[in-house]
Length: 427
Figure 1 (tube, rainbow, N blue to C red):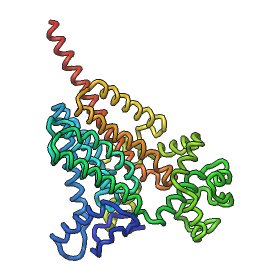
Figure 2 (figure 1 turned 180 degrees about the vertical axis):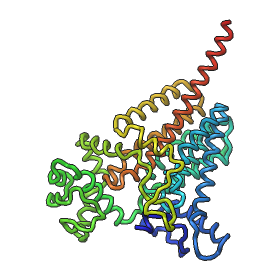
Figure 3 (figure 1 turned 180 degrees about the horizontal axis):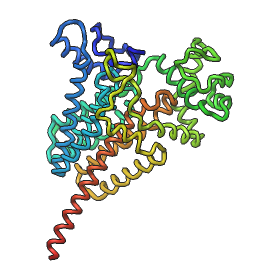
Figure 4 (figure 1 turned 135 degrees about the horizontal axis):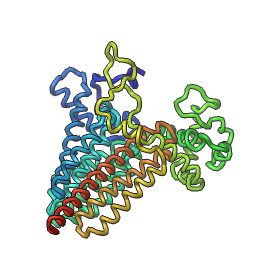
């Protein structure tokens, strides 16, 4: 527990890289590899200091925020400074940056989605976008899509933006870069999914059924029969895959074989479509845990006087606000996303400029990703580690919130300036 949950571990021995050592492919492997090379070039001791990994994340993070501010300033001048202030407050929160000193894929997800967003805003804010900005956009998209298996659907969704990006310039180099990059995003998204080990798939299927559908079910036996499983397994309802004891042995090859051959994500999705009330109940549970960014892991190194799982609260204004103030209800999330899409639609209709519409489409991508990531954990892993699996939902929500604040302040300021101008003219 001390090693994995109670404290931050700073030093690790350097061994031979194992590309699929975690049971699946992840672009985090390359990020960690860069950090290891950097660490060994400075201190070639065979020991990896994880602060070098944090340094790599910080560089990408700063570049992403710089691009976001630069892109907004190009189009709306001083609104860029508002974006800078809100972005730093939200995304420099300890709940986010604590992941920089870990091997969790959440850090890759955060910084490269921000990089993709920042580069996208710049592409949508320049009459003739530069090739290096396009490359940064696709680098962000590739690393984001391949950071975690959970991100792969969002990676495929990002490919749709390529159809818009290819129209920004007419030269062949630009078009070839877009096509090649889109192919890379697809390849990474597919690779991250198909390389999942059988053990991980079995675990996820178990969690989805027994710690998802059957948890709090009014009739577990009937649910099992509908899913094509033995109704005798109802004794396992509400159990998760990592318990020490079970009423039925789930480690036998026969049990795993039945789960693997019978259960798939399409069947789970179909079950919830047939029982929409059950899905709404699960989404209500997701809403309760949706804004819990801190997972209770200690973020201090182990020193005398530092208690187990001690967590720093400095720079936690935003994460504390989300927990203590925002409504943790499904209706709030529905209203928030619906309102955001309504404003996007109105702005999309009002603006005929292709680049302004591209900006709206980038924000729509973030919104759709947030919706997918709110529902997917229920279908993919039940209620297991739900708040952690909603990390990307939080990032998307916070990007949307930042956009709303900047947009609202800019509109209010513009209205105030127009009002003052008309007032002076009327005198």
